[in-house]
Length: 195
Image 1 (cartoon, rainbow, N blue to C red):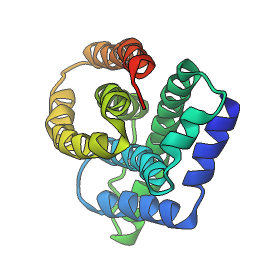
Image 2: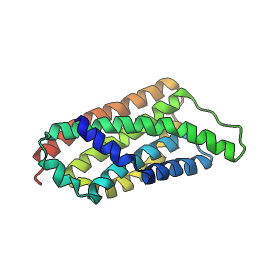
Image 3: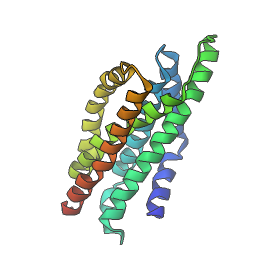
Image 4: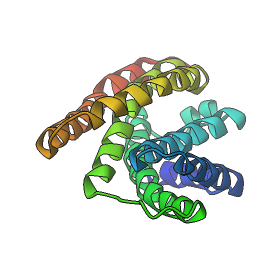
């Protein structure tokens, strides 16, 4: 499992991917919107980049020929989802801070709950993405994923309308539980998949 994680983070370490992710985050930070929109976009771009690199190098068939169990492959993807969601949502406030300095604005504020909201939203979208990825492969699932990205704005609008921190914590807990529960259907689908 460690080797799969190392392989995927090597795919992310290319300068092109990092520059595009930083550029996307910086550009989204210039738009007057909360920082919780930027973090999920960065994280979801990084997840798509890993899958796109696997498609480009035809690694899907190669990975299935290795002596790595399908369960550990799915576990790796879900663990990477958590790590990438945390990285994307941790990078968002820094990009927002620098973007606010570029446009000479002093109105930057970041609340600790913003990190939880962004990470929870990212995990919820990944909870929908990973079972589709395991069922249809990376090519079709990226198209489904891009269509699902259209749900990000209404989902974030719904989360921003929650009046108290208690209900926000409940919403974040729901998102994390949905992510954890989506592991079992993804594992079941991937185990039965024929290559």
